[in-house]
Length: 627
Image (cartoon, rainbow, N blue to C red):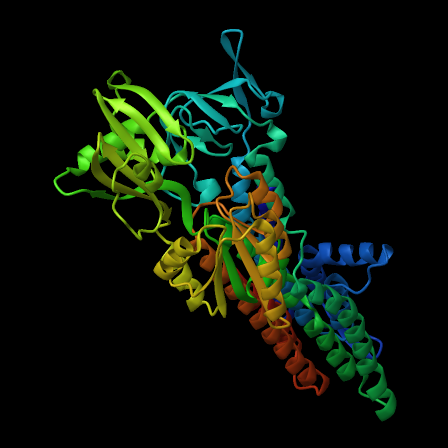
């Protein structure tokens, strides 16, 4: 599509260039051409040359005007340009008639270039669509379309190829380029047992991936569907301009007609002067600047957000983000990573930290619990199962086992108490794992959810953006929630909530916001779907690989970076500011020049500036939304 648009634009530029050359020749010839008498007025011998230039430059505009009239669409910019320039020919203003069409076409070329450029910022995402998949069948590989691969089949992905379907790596290791999906420039390392998503590019090793979703349900298909439909959801400003143009154009045509007829009928003369004023009035009134620049601004904003790894499902949501007043964030998966990690080692006196960690890791080595996995990961060495025997779990308390012939314990305070061991008292935030060997207390380990690196910066950015309230909702313990909130600078905390309680809290906040203010909820898109749907704007974190995130939210942050929330708000406010600037500028200049034209103080050249000049300036301003 982009290639076709580019060819059309080049063809138009070439045609306009040829027409401009003929026009320049006509202007030069008109200085020496004789006047040909025609009744009560003279016709310049240069008229045929001006007509030739006009046909080359504006033939397509006249053709569109006639075609649209046949379809009942009369009052558009093609009609205005045709009537105004044809009228200029009738009153003998040949040079101005062709100049108006020339500058109009230059403006149209500029508009096409701007639209193509803005489309690239979103259309670049279309490059993530995979063309084929190498499926391993009957001992060999077969190249087929991604939609022909079934769940459970194994695909082979070579270096440089795009991952065609979601799945799990069963063989190989590599680095993935996720920039098209997340906006991140750093590659992501993956290995056996890890999930990969369609749309990423395999950079280094050969991978064998077991397919987990068919093409219609894959991440790449969902994202492409989201992007393709983003332009269909118009903002209030775009709806306003559509309605405005529908009524505005017939009104100004009627005013121009009255301007051409009433004054000369009243005064009994001056027809050429008043017709000229009416024609200038028509050129000025063309609503191109508004009709073009406002959708272009929103399109640029959507594209700029996508480059930052933020997918916004439509310009209506982009506009609503700018009105954000209250932001409510889930804790786990949004402000924290949602994974357990060893936060602190507190050995008893005389006990090395390495002994404390090794004992705990061996005790938990047979468990698949997230806490057990975090201990083994922190230990970082291979567990020799031959050293371990008689592993028993005491439900709700912890693990008992024998390590190198000595009995070890790892669990909560009740486990220690039950075995007659005095454990240390602590007020640490997180899960506490006490460790003992025989009857000796070795110390305790603190395991906690990890706060995301940029979470504090995200909160600071939202405060700087002028959010009136920032609140955190979580089902976690109050003490843990308050500790994290204090670390991040969040004053409003609601803890120990069930999913239904979260909806109730959001309802209360919705009732407290101003009439035009918006409530934004940010969650992980999995267990927060009810709240995401209830909020004015729902933002889902970590959209890659999360079906619920893409389905339930209005905005999807394709990375796990909460700082992108503030970035999305900044982009929306910048875009809306540009839209308002264009509306005020375009209407202000047009009203001023329309009044001047009605009073005979504005020529056709001023009309050209009020139409094409204003449109070009508005488009240039709109293009700032892409940056």
